[in-house]
Image (cartoon, rainbow, N blue to C red; front, side, top):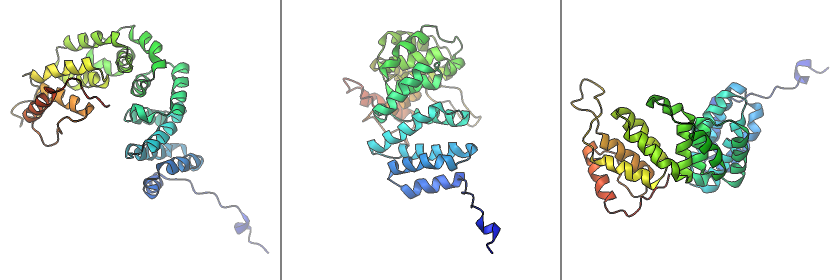
Length: 280
């Protein structure tokens, strides 16, 4: 007589968050194989754990120097921009902004174009379209930018028109450059200027934006101190220098440098440039 308990099918084990990191390490440099495995694993992954699986795939792409691997990961991530799970979608929107233009393959671009056509613009979609330098998005981005920027600087981070103008400029619509620079020049708060607006100008990859940032290397203004033990706050010029060197090739390495050393090194390096070597 058979054992009824043994005759019952065994339920397939559901994947857990710790499994995904192990898988990523197991596949190592074979990122494309990991992407293929991730697609099959999603059906075994409870909805509340899917973002962990997708996050490990994203990490494997960001850690890879192989163009094909990075493109495979971006294709996989773009597929999930349509996810019905808000946590998955938010994670994918965030991590796609860490990739580069060349990481977007033709299939990834085709998917992105459809999403940009079908969905209303959001700040993440503006930023991703800009990073991909997807020219087909320009009409929609410029229409959004034309609605005018938020007045309060703290609101710009979540302001679609502002981010649409940044993305349009990055793609090549130079008509927005003056608007961006005017907004920077009108900012009276050194903290907002140095910590938000400098980074946003750096995102544009525009030669004019970097010329403008370089002007702030001459600034003697300091940000407020963050703790009582600080004798003085950070230099505004150092914030400009950090944005510049984060986006260019061949610039000074800021690691281990004081504010003054970084500013001096950036000025010396930039003095010999005919054109900013912007790569990201």
